[in-house]
Structures are given as structure tokens and as C-alpha cells.
Image (cartoon, rainbow, N blue to C red; front, top):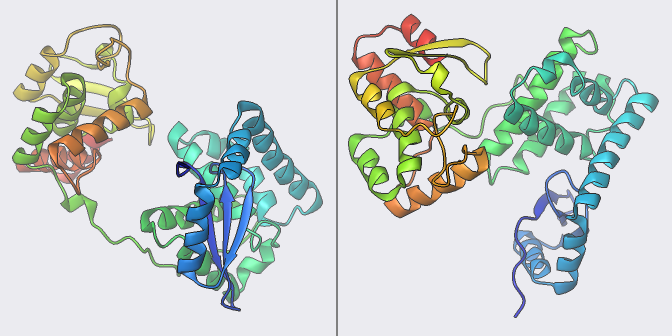
Length: 338
């Protein structure tokens, strides 16, 4: 029996003629390995589903996912960007290539750079934008096309908003370096409206997570709810940064110093964590957590606990709420949360 292929990336396009198109990639940023057309959305999605179960297509995707093919795909993207820069120095593709080589881009956090690079690759690979002159983005029609591009990702609103925000960062850098005066995303509203700062983990949710999670996963989540540290800062936290009454560290996302007071409960939580090395948090095998490994384990624990609608990052809001309830003002919170 054929198994449905997972992990592929599909981009859908709607043509004014009513035709629906689907471009299929073995992974985000990879080469296009199939182009499908359909009479309507149901038809095109049915064809994509059939393609996922096609053994011949699975072989094509497996070949495109080999390390050599991935490397060649990345080199091809870089080569196309370089060619665009040389041949069309006033195109958005050339500006994106320059931005990704800039000191400002290199100063971004590792995860942020990865997300930005993926979004910019998708943006410049789109037929409508990659070779467009920067002058095009001074025109009202540019906003219309950007909204249509965003709406093609409307089934994942947060991803759609993130792509638009990255384009905004690109043009902000372009304005700061004198490449363009355009600000095409200014009129574009967000699709995702949830106010995450109002969503926190209550005592009942934390108790469910503790019961379902391993001690190694629970320790990270518990400290997050008590300190407000981001996941990346927690996983790289060292014992040298944990003092008797404070945690003092430079945050990865903004590069700012954060000074976080430790409550009695937080100090007790740290004392309960066995010291297995320089870093505070480790897996059950005694190895430091990786970001992917922890996300998978935390997701599994959430599923076992039956928790829905809460994310790890909401633990940061839980800590901020508790700090505010203890009487800290906004300036204190800004210093604590980094």
C-alpha cells in the first residue's frame, strides 16, 4: 500500500482565468519538483494528495533530499541571487541578496536569520517579485500584489504575517542604505489577531503538564514560568549565569542584558536540577537539549496532558503576569524580561 509522503512544501496560486496551480517542493527553499493545475481548489488539493501517494514521485523527492542535492539547491539559490545582483542591481532580488550579506542581518539571532532567509527566498523566488525593479514598489499596485501573495498563505495566518514582516524588514534596511524610498507593507494589515500577551498558563494547566512531562522537560517549563526566559535562552543557560538571588545573562533575541530575580520557588526549582555539566538543562541521557529535540518532547508532553491553545512562549507571559502581581512596574519588567 502506498504511503502518503510527508514533509513536502506546496505553494498554491490562483490565476484570474480561474485556474488553480500548485508548485511542489521537496522542502522549503528546495527546487520545484512538480507543477499541477486544477479547475478549482478541491480539484488541485485532490491532485496534490494523489501525488503524495505516487511511488515514482516519492523517489523524485528522496533524490532531491539527499545532502548533495540539498547543497546544490542552496548553491543554485545563491547563484540566482548573485546573478540577479550582477545583472539587475536595482531589483528586489539583488537587494535581498545584499541584505542577507549585511552586518545587520548577521546580528540577528540564529533562528531569526533562518526564518528570514526562508521567507526572503520564498519572496524572491515568486515570479512576481524576484526580478521586479525597486521602482515598482513605489506604485500602489505593489501593495495589491503583496496582499495577494500574503493571502496565498492565509491558511496559516501567522506564517503569512511573518513573511510580510520580513519583507518590511528588507525594505527598512533598503531605506536605511539609500537603495529605495519605498515602504510597501505599511498599509497591509495582519491576518493573525490573537493577543498572546493575554494568554497564560494557569495553575491547573501547569499541573497537567507536570504530570505528563518527563522531569527534564518539566524543569525547563517550570523555570520558564518562574523567570520569563525565552526557550533559546533557557536551553543555553549555564550555571555561571545562575546566582543566588538573580539570573544575569545577555538574551539571544535582542542582545540585551537581563537581570531576573529568583523567587523562593525558583531557587528551590534550580536546587532540584542535578548538575550534569556547564549547562543547566539536559535530556534524560545527560546531553544538552537541542532546540528541535526540546520542541518535540514538549509537544509530546502537551499532547499527553490534553493541553491545547497554549504555547511554550506563553510561559513567558505567565512569569510577567506574576512579576506584575508582585508589584513590579513596566520599567522593572523591561529590565527583567530583556
